[in-house]
Length: 494
Image (cartoon, rainbow, N blue to C red; front, side):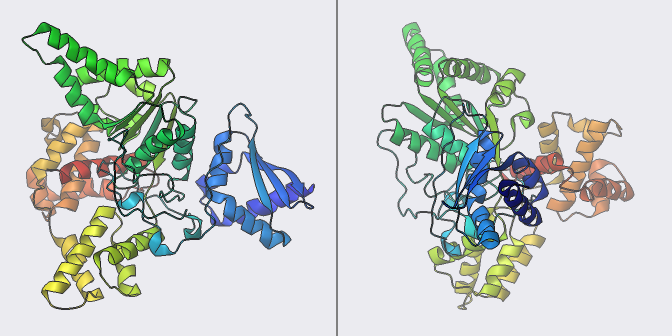
């Protein structure tokens, strides 16, 4: 066995024991050591595709160096190449300093990323804490003078990279430095507060720095919709009508980059979809960069025209998954500093272990702890945290009723409420009915017999339906649980 193969076997053996099997099979099966130079202490790792090399370098460079050091005693430099040499490999930014935990989250998780929807909190995070990039704190949120829609506080430099977002971060960086290339369009999706909007603005800010003459539009789909409606609104003066329509076309088709947040809100808006379809085609034909943000993958965007879904998938689709326990701890510590709250490690651990569904919920818990402690003239403590979280778990959501849940489920899956409440045994109806029953039990304090009254069924049937969902494996049925999180998000806005 050659030195190259021998070292690679060592690396793979150690990685396999620490890395999630899916991650291991996806990223390391297509790579190998191409060259080893013990004199220069250098190694070349070659992958089948540039994307694989980019991911390994961005997420595992330090880990690979540690394994090599441990087994050879040498500090190796690693170069990354790929077999598809036509695709340039952009070297990710490297931060040598290992951050303190409380500094990790001065970026996307707490930068006001707008709530969107489908979350992946059931996915295991294995990215080591020390491999996160060191964020650069920004005290003031400012807008670009040239592009007022770009938030200058959202940059790649202060975006923390972990296993849940490393691939997407790398793709976003490639788009920012080489717009209009093979990653066009770029479609990023993921749950609430995970940094999607941060990355969207980071792309725009980096483009602005690299290409000062670029015309960049960074907007929400709601703004696109409103401006489109304004452009077609009937006017007394026919010439004004023509000018409004032309102004709209020119604004969005004469750009070098179009960045749109919350694209899922175009669902059901037929005329707006048609306008966006023609805008999309015009930009792509002229090799202008398009970046779209959503709460779901293209295939899960209900009531969106197939021709748009197809185009959204033409470039590259990348998702962001939530931070792990360690990062939640870092967020809590940072927020405690920001809110001037002093909590001991036991309390921090308790909060991080019990709040994992939403970063904003975590922030809300801390604010309630401070308010309760101040009201009682006490110091924030574990007992107060337990009281707050126990109350949060047992209190029903005030505005959510079985009718809300049934209506939102019917709308989400595009079936009739009467079908859900009927005795239909069609597979698709039964599935939606089971999900609605599961959510009624999870989000209200109703008993099984009371839920049965809402669905015209006895409590044993309700219990059976509830268990059909509750006993599903989240790892084996990710789409169902993604749907459930989106429905919860919609219910939260009632």
